[in-house]
Length: 244
Image (tube, rainbow, N blue to C red):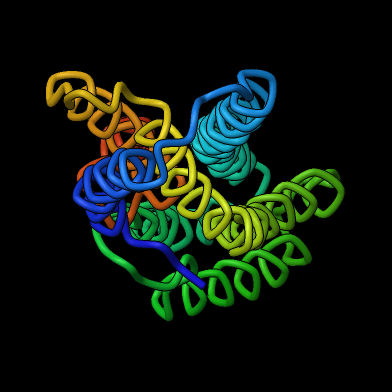
């Protein structure tokens, strides 16, 4: 299950409502608040869940950026090793590399397959022509040993990136986060002074939790919200521009 970052915005009105319901429940029952240990435990558990979910999303976001750098390096390494092929075979392969690098751009602009059909086609073309050229007269004796493993690494990294983008916490983690935010709001409202409500504190708590959950979902699903990985395309663009 995918959680769009916009879904976090519903936490704000729900928390405000539950804060007020908790306060009114306390007023109606006129029960004294005598369980700070239980409240502290619940709020502490909610804080840990929120913190670990956020830190996990940031870690996966950093992984996406690191994998892009690894792919850029893999493409660059394979491109340099084209010098081991016969001169006649190099121009066509260099153009295929430029096209392939272009096909790997803008993968984060929208929800799309990590490996596009164009990239897959170019991978096959590069591999087939490289294998043929490495065995052709005029190729370096090390062409097969150095170029083909580099190409294999270049192709394999696309699958690694695809798996990384499909790795998210179980849906129950986010559902539990939403449930805890509502439960914590009700408990906080129940603990409020029965003689009146503090809208400032109610809004501050609801807004803080909402923004944290929203930021977590933005980072966890960088293709769906405002946060994107478009800036990381600069490394691929620089690589493509350096290909002569």
